[in-house]
Length: 456
Ligand SMILES: Nc1nc2c(ncn2[C@@H]2O[C@H](COP(=O)(O)OP(=O)(O)OP(=O)(O)O)[C@@H](O)[C@H]2O)c(=O)[nH]1
Image (cartoon, rainbow, N blue to C red; front, side, top):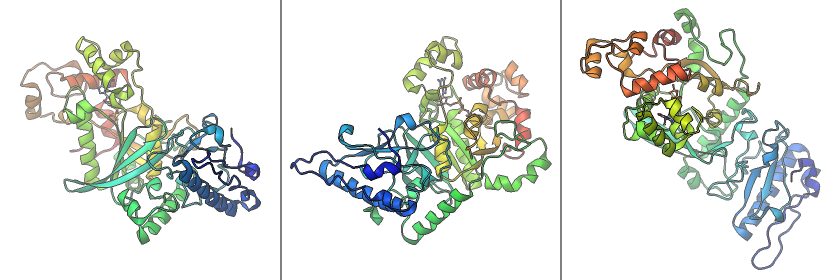
């Protein structure tokens, strides 16, 4: 079903037969290959736009999609154009090697597995996003950005569409200079200033400035190099304050980032069965304090198994199973999450280096793209541990408040050197993460990582 750009000479776009019985011009793209690459691409896009316009007039609906069979191939990335019925349209493909679609501001392609949300003219180009993603990373498109007032200032909520799972992932962005490339791109030739403003994209002179900055940052994106301090998965564990301060500059360049998975129970109805609500609030607080950073909020309820299954898992936990066994008894993996969408969102926001707020080593590995190929450009310069506040309150007052004054010290609390008497349900949850899921929850190890950050 796919062909290369060079094949366009013979390619045609044949829209479905309109209701009035007339036939559309099938030769819209015919001249494209007679031009040198760049002009060809502009011409191509213009022609394609005409084709879209024609399709819209005739059937009001069309979609772009990436040929699924080529998805894992590094190059070329093929794109197909289809009308309501694929049978009626021949394939239309672009080669990733050309800058055919990276130079176009007025036409954006979407390889969203056949889904172009809302607007039939909305498309997104992989290449124009800086081509910094691994070939296996899903495509993401920021559909809207809105300012949300927050104590002490504001942040910008970005809503993303991703081809991977068709979910609305979010990015909570503190700092005016962190901009989404896909949001800023012009959507179709007819997009008005008002339409841009409604979806939160910039306009006028500011738009030009931001587009220039995005293009510069994409060119400047460094390749990920494994340093001596890198422990094989992009994670740097600082072992002395001197080394920490010698890296101060890069830490300033690397904003605080939290990649957070949705938890209705912990965040919305304040369950203390887990620490999710605390972690989200704490990440917001820390990032707001620095004035710059990102929380990627992934719709991966229940570590990816969904709320229905998570609630079943809770009932199994009430029968004595821990979180891992409860998942396994329900025939789910202990953790069903992947982080391709998070990687793609960070790339879209221009965040290539970060200090990651997490205890989850697997998350760091996946974000750094270990094993995903050398094209990875995301670097976790260090991880910032996320201890529950009550673990840090080691004084009498904290212990009293948490435990009601019981004298028994739990073994896990003792292991952590905490003056805590009993384990709460959240402590048990955390113990399972530490003991069975490889989370880095040892106080001493993590304190060495980033002095100051956990100092509340
Ligand atoms: N399946 C399952 N999921 C849970 C349970 N409790 C919380 N979750 C989900 O776990 C996810 C949060 O993952 P965690 O393992 O707590 O933390 P993490 O994101 O892996 O690691 P950190 O970055 O250190 O927070 C959220 O999607 C929660 O909804 C549970 O008992 N069972």
